[in-house]
Image (cartoon, rainbow, N blue to C red; front, side, top):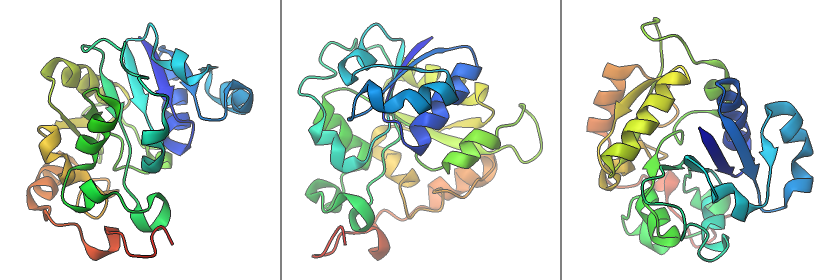
Length: 225
């Protein structure tokens, strides 16, 4: 597949390398432009492009930027992305550490539902609940003991099926985590967040997740301080 990645942080660069290793043609963009990505290109095998080109002529897209940067994306960036092209959202809301207050999320809107509203395109939520180093190094063959499972949430069955297969190819058990409306179950602060669980344990963790955000993951009047 031709895969466009927007965001060259820890998760974005890790996905660029791993997906390139699987034989996909990867292009990658960030807010600073292609000239800032020469080291990422050398390390991952991906080709650096401007943000607008990262969503042109692709089979799958990945959005992996700080949540506060989503509204700052170029207007209409995803307007011409076909509805059947899966768009992976790895974003997490860190109100105290980075993003500041986002009122709709504070009021209970799932983070990926907020992302969808901002960009005008359906997303598939995955790769948000695993450390980048574990994503890079902990993939295993199917059936291997200790294989990590990753939750995949989304509303488009066809798009989700493509992403589920991609997760498996990267060396992780892919667990269908339901629709975007339920994707809060894999957000920061839940039992599924960065805990490297197997399929059965991940299924329990998603089922037992509390709906209300814990205090640690809510904004304060000083956020993002």
